[in-house]
Length: 114
Length: 114
Image 1 (cartoon, chains in turn yellow, orange):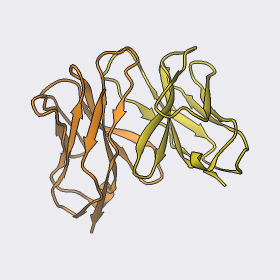
Image 2 (cartoon, chains in turn purple, yellow; image 1 turned 90 degrees about the vertical axis):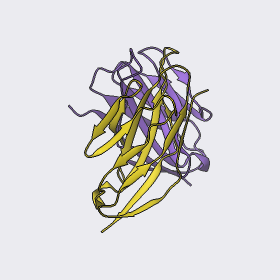
Image 3 (cartoon, one colour; image 1 turned 45 degrees about the vertical axis):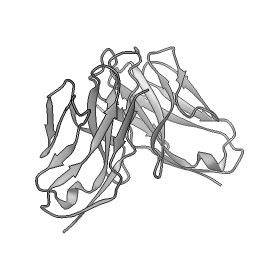
Image 4 (cartoon, chains in turn green, brown; image 1 turned 60 degrees about the vertical axis):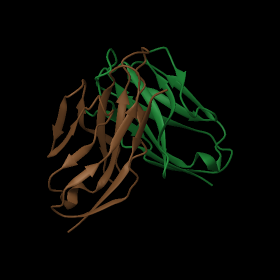
């Protein structure tokens, strides 16, 4: 049981380049989330998927797109990277159906945009 | 909307000292409350949770009690260790809304010296 896995672990991009961050979970969770973490800002929600086939914007969606490929996988795409997108990105999943279930987080992707 | 306020860090303690990290929240109804811990270079992981008023969550010597009257969920530990050095996040999940999007505090960094 691997939990939540993310690839890559580290990435350096030049301004304007594109890339996709991959996330997968093997816990049969309905809901999946993408966050970014910046110093002093805590966690900010980029996009989430409450269930397979649905996605919704979070607090900071500009510059990002997502795909819920199937129940296991939820990818985050940067179409044209900007230095402001330098951050640590975390994917999380959760079994929905009540407020009492916790989120499970991946190890993060550390992205630098030059 | 929902919000979580945590004391700002860093909190610096000597080993075996008593720890309190304050957390207060604003939410409608009776949300579920969580403490997550993030060790350096890792993702967040659940430390403890409480799902109704007066519940006490506990794990690894840490405790927090859900106080509805003061809308608080303060984290405590009687004797901290160097290995407890990490960032601690308080979070809530609302009881209504269907998607149950968690709200996180900004995190409190704990540094424990030998």
